[in-house]
Image (cartoon, rainbow, N blue to C red):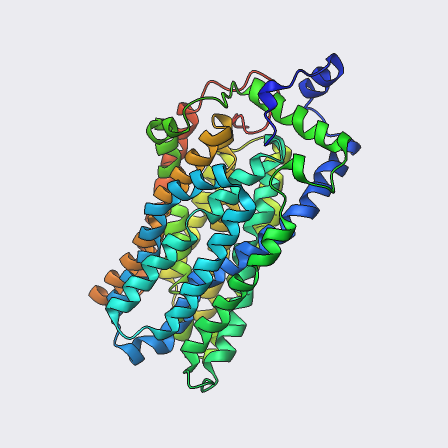
Length: 459
């Protein structure tokens, strides 16, 4: 990996770095576009498969619960245990990635999680369900924060909200793909001696295993190993990352594990926690919510894709607007506040059409704002510290993925309705709004260069 700290830029390079963030040249647009086209489609494909495999259980539940004897609370617990395994293994996984490289480590993650997803077809009761969901989380741990860390080696901060926004598009795209396919499979009687919900796990897990070889062959370790970059493009990446290190006073030589006790890391984890809590609390119960409209499995699958279409639109608008305005915290507050209102409204209304509309507006907000939140760690983390810090933030925050599904399951069993669970999710989004102000105060002082993105200066 290129070490920008060791670079000695010329006066021309220095002047170019100082104008970073003030204007974006045509050359810069071409370079960023070239890198994005080469990296993001494949990384997004991997993440689509990951997201399908972690959420397809929501559709399998429609038939699996009765087949193996799972209660709503047991399903919620097992669905959430994915994130306990994820939490325990994410920091070690990302540290291993920083040592072994992205190609080998991503291939290992793909192989293990794909195999475990297919093994979910043989769940026979609560214990096996709990065990496999935990192992699936442990196997996939490190993929998303690993991709985020990998992207920090290619894109300067001023482009990261848009880039991360394009990556996070994989989440709603996975939802769009999963719903219709899962609904269609559940309408069948299964094949090869497997029931319809068992085939659902096999079909969703196989692509991860098949992607191992392409990952090893196609993914470059760093800009220095990318044959499709020319020397001019490599120099631009080096200058831009070096400028980020100077402007944000980043130290690539610090002990990477010092990020574990950095209060800024812990506070960002607290800020990010409500988003996976709401996303997984909603997505893993969405098929159940829509099935309660009185529709067939195939129709439920089609309707479940609607909120994810709204999420795609949000991810194309909000991160880009944040980069254009050079502002982060105001976007987080406004969009999170909107999500809290629409989530509460989805619980309050009784019309299926209105409920689906408010759920879709919530998806617009909670998916799109993640990309803006993920620009903030780059203000103070770099190198191996970034790998450990990003993994720490993601692993702690993704405990929300445990609390969301499990909490809704408990609330539903206690009240007989999902409405109270949706109010619970809305309350966590209000909490995110409040924490945003504490994060903004803690991440000061701002970078030294005027106009640098991610500075957090509200407008």
